[in-house]
Length: 221
View (cartoon, rainbow, N blue to C red):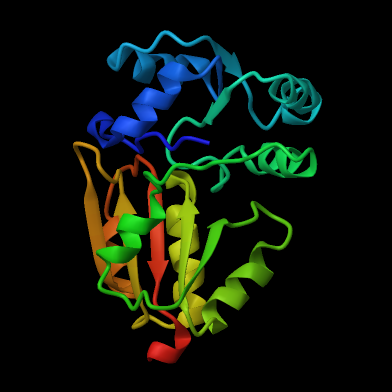
């Protein structure tokens, strides 16, 4: 399992580039996206699509290939496989088949957001994406009561709704950080009281890019 850049292509490690070149095959979430990365580094290892829509059907085949000695590398469109991305199912199947699993350290969007937020990060919980409908209210209520800092991902078209729901539950003074397009050209940080951050985004005509939210814990108030 090899992390790939969340934006800036220079965030690849020497080791990641070497292992992608040495692999017999690369399983990629989107081969078109991954091909641009491989071309940038001159890697010509064959790419095969492996994503949430086919992982259950194709994993037994890849387990058999690895058991026969084939070296496979797993990557996603951006970041570390398995962190709100495909990868968990393969890792579990490998463990069950006694096939060694190795995951390189590397890019993950929530780590830089948490580290530079100025919100306590000695203890935190990672929520990933909130449920789209069923269970969303329950999860938001739990986040509001959580004593530790909470980190979650959100899509641009749901950001205002999520911030408004958090303000309603947490109050306007609870601090939150919204980090947009981390490591990319238009990287942006908005950190402050929920009411202020919500207003900053509500005044925009549109919101684009990948988003990480860092919510101060209830115990910090």
